[in-house]
Image (cartoon, rainbow, N blue to C red; front, side, top):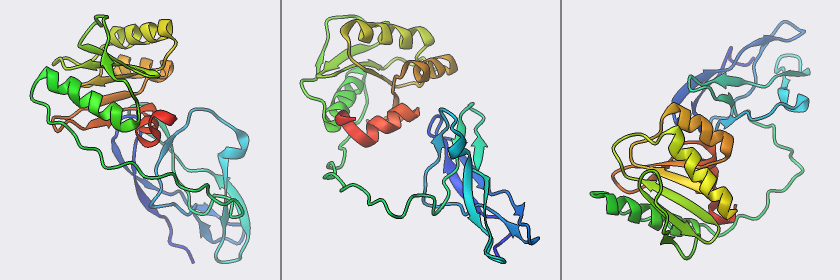
Length: 231
């Protein structure tokens, strides 16, 4: 018989907070307890839309062999993000995964000691992602320095205050006029309003730690970090 419950460690892709999730236990028709088989190696994803077929997961009772559909595990993060808990064995067996692309070389950060170093660190990171022709623009953003590349506008904010809602919206408006996507790099993080607005506008947010390694703050930044300029 299965254990009464399983637990996994999860990281919220929006705020990076760690959680421990314990699977709920449901009674099978035979009376035995069953629980969704959690994937300890999977990653939590943010729920952005609802679809009826995605709300359920198939669970097999190890006592009687009956296969039933049970609610897919979810977890609410205090930051407001609803997390989809990874479940083992839910991917179709018949579908072969696509060939893996060549791995990027390891990122080599630039230690940040000055505001100029912060700009350099962001430029090095963008080049590592695959962006080309990275340069400063002539415009003056609300805070920091504006960088542009082929297909991207970025703002690097080395100030000691968290980036504000206005900072994020101004970057988005400028990117809209130039018909390119944008990304924000901040040394001091973001206000809650700025983070919420960035998710709405589709802006990847990064925090620059002092080692010079940009840390993704929202799921959009996670995607950009994983997929690079070809996303």
